[in-house]
Amino acid sequence: MNKIIKTGLLTTALVTSLLSTGMLTSNSVAKAAPEDELNTIIHLPQQTTVVRVNLKGYVFGLRVMKANIVGGLTENSYSIRADLFTSGLGALLKKFQIWATTTGTIDENGLNPIQHIQQNLNKKNRRVEMNYGADTVDISIVPRLGSQGKPPASQAQRFESDDALSALLNMMMRGCRFTGEPCVGTISVFDSKQHYLLRMERIGNKYIKQRGFSGETIGCSVYYVPVSGFDPEDLPSAEEAATPVKIYLAKFDEAGLYIPVRMSYKISVLKAVIKARNIEITQH
Image (cartoon, rainbow, N blue to C red; front, side, top):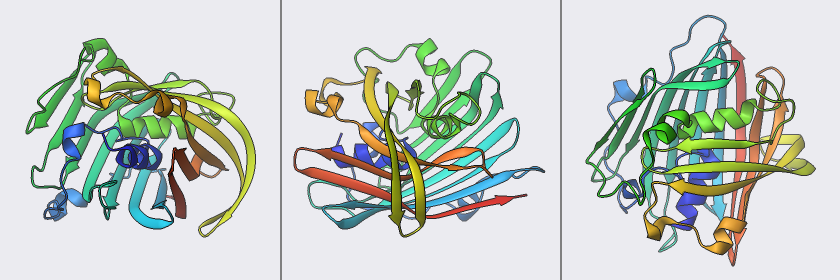
């Protein structure tokens, strides 16, 4: 998979770098999804905290990516939608548009996804749906992928992992609800094909001043660790495996979250930076 695509999706939604490789192959953006489907972002029960984050991504100082994320949280449930757009950068980054949604429940042990949908808006219009049952996850990929990796992810790995958007929320809730400190531990992720781990290490505090946010943050190195469901050509090189995405998390007490406000990835001559340009938190 293209390095910048992987980095952009990881640092934006952590998520979908992390979508199936077959979804990220077109240079053209097709027509938008039906308006009624785009508008079903989240259903808001009473006492919901709604978080909206707008991010922009830069490579070599050029703006090449935009992402909009909206999430609704209650004491025991969550809904998230992410929309990702890239403008393309020659051979380094294809032009594409993807949206994804997730709904689930929250308990003392963590997040429990109920349904995850991701839609690529290129000429293939590949759509992924994952529906979670009592002990298994039903996966639909249309049109289907040519491979499920060598070896493919096991049924247990698929069911016991977070989907990509739930993984993002899992990271944001650490230090507020699931763990005593932010940026600790490992998050297990399954994206409909690939099963991987996000391993986190603290790198110290940093004051960040940028358009859209100014304040203290906690630095977090996130390492991408493949486990199963990968074809040989999708595995990271030794340099890529050893190079983390650096994510700077700011605590927002009103939401009970550590929200990523700045993310960066530098490998060889490549440097990509993603910045939060707007953060809104409201109570319903």
